[in-house]
Image 1 (cartoon, rainbow, N blue to C red):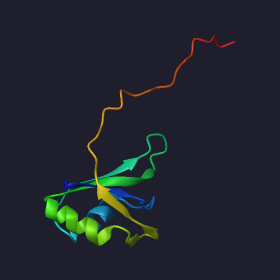
Image 2 (spheres, rainbow, N blue to C red):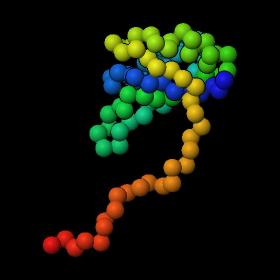
Image 3 (tube, helix red, strand yellow):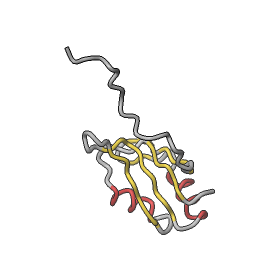
Image 4 (tube, rainbow, N blue to C red):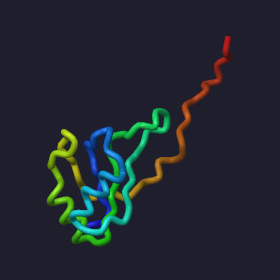
Length: 99
């Protein structure tokens, strides 16, 4: 069990302080990161919480997975390692003239 947890199905109004508060009842929270949309600045509805130990992470996951928070049932899993997705994409240009 890793110490970093994926937290899905968050209410768009949930901020990092509220998420830290929720998880701190189950141990020491090392970090909280809610993923934001670059264009709108609004939450994407998921984030990551890192606990100080595997046991604390497991305790938080057991207690909070499926629990209602701000009207939504939380989806909590062990976070998978980040993979390199090959750069920023950026959308083509296509070689076509403007007019």
